[in-house]
Length: 364
Image 1 (spheres, helix red, strand yellow):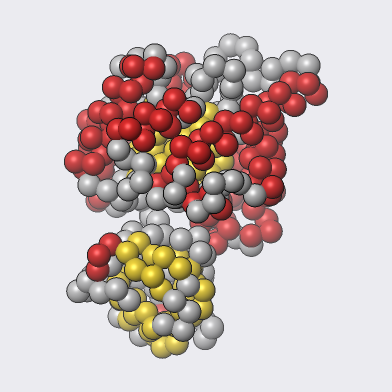
Image 2 (cartoon, one colour; image 1 turned 45 degrees about the horizontal axis):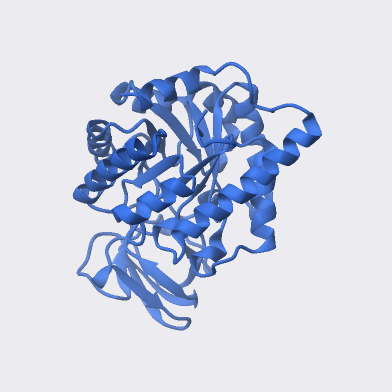
């Protein structure tokens, strides 16, 4: 099992970022209930990741409970390039320029990891940033540059995910950076590797060849992945319902059913599942969750998810420790209800191959 927190089966996975990478914050989050710490290989420096791993290992030893590390590879996820100062506030009506190749740093101009395909751009093409939190409308396009106007504004940071539905194209296989990041992550001793935009069993084989001792999670973020779901559930050690990009790549109203399919596919094959993205989105600012978020978390537990993962809520939100506390409370209550209804623990019994692997990796 991913969780070894007393009285709880569903694991809590948190992402480290500027507001949560300090030793004191990691300590507070672990004591509040964190089971797995996610290191985003798309963000942060290697020195920051090394310090985070050192702190997590020391704190886990102090509390006497294993806390595992997950390295999330950038893979084929399309991202924004750098911004002057690392972030910018893009307001409705402002002009933004996106380039197909790296450019000089600016507040309202940057580039994309994978360029667009000009022939696929619709006249009303939209650019969705950070899972659609910020939306741009393309006003003029060429093969080298997109001129846009901000339709839905907000804070944008370097490396945020970006998509132009129907107009972006990414190459198959690992990119050079992934192989380098994978070697670095293995040297850090992480137990889990997550692969963004996994779409076939071949993706597992490619990562496994470079990281034979780690558990490998395929992130389901596209219609191609949904079409290959059974073979991916067989190949990967676990699957992640990466709802942010998935809701950009397929109609958003299909995502709840996709989540249930992915979790059920994993459960039927004795693989673990992780539900991620916007579980407590409002708590990036608010100290309290919305009622819908509480229901979302509880329903993910009742669906059978083995872990729930937060990203921006703990990476750059205002209340990272409080987010963990809320997750723990809702998960525990949902599991209590699960047990009241079933009369037995839904995931008790002997450990699966994945769980044995997790335990062995945690003891390294």
